[in-house]
Image (cartoon, rainbow, N blue to C red; front, side, top):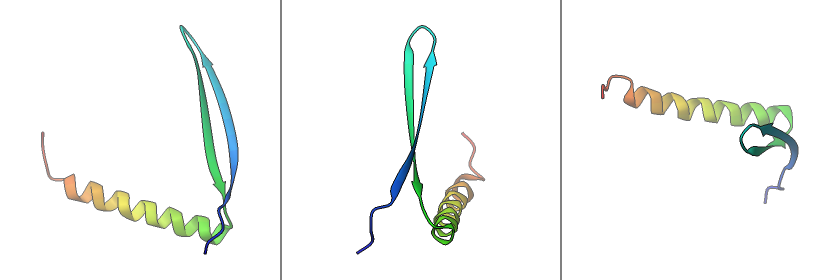
Length: 57
């Protein structure tokens, strides 16, 4: 079983007509695991963009 990663939290508050708080959680991973996940995301994005590249709306 894989242990749950810890997360680094980044909170940003934007003020305008309304106040919006954005909370970004980034997993803290070892460099090898981070690269592995990055490659997986890049491959999936490439697959999606390749699928729709020739289509026009």
